Picture (cartoon, one colour):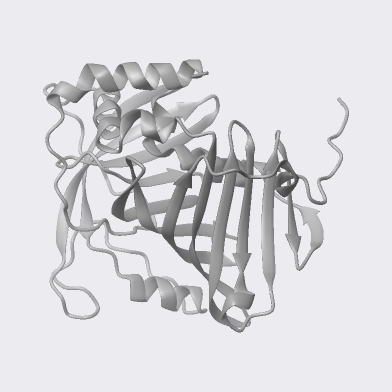
Length: 297
């Protein structure tokens, strides 16, 4: 049965689809380590709700929220002394279960990481040894399975911050070098004349929308021309999305860059999503291995 927030997302889609411009295949979004300075919204600017509704339509509308299970497979750049292209698997089961696997053994490595969320309980395993994990972080991974539809649900307050310019396309070579241990240089907030490879770099105009969920505030960048959801900033973590493809009617990114600020500095982790499958059977035990006992309150 469709949940209430999914119904509201569907209603927003219906209200705005008539004014949605055709989504053209455009250049790719550039990862940035901080939000660009947004110019103030003019009186003629669309509302934040309108911008999110158009993005919802551009990404497939109800197809973003109608799944019961989600299986994503691809690659992730990992660290275990040196850089490895590990195997990446995400298994999600609505409404509150997710398991993420990072497997460096697929590329000469020795580490195998698993991250779990089940009913608000989070934990991890490294080479089958369990440990605690940040529930808020893995909850964001589950939220991202819904794409922009997560921000079209009830209880999310939306405000338009303004417009900004994003450099375009991303410098993946820089991300890979950073993950391998090189210092991370802040990305330009406006388009430079050329990339490190010497190729010309364009730019994209984006709407900057601030989404507030309870006490949690996130900043979204949505392309003005295509209405594609290009970037979200949540706390110390930024995720950038590009190279979109349609999977069962849902337009989703096939390349993601996660930029996290930690005590040790900034880390950049590139992901590639190769397949996204909706509603394939997933056994419940996949979300319970070494699950800690939930504290009684």
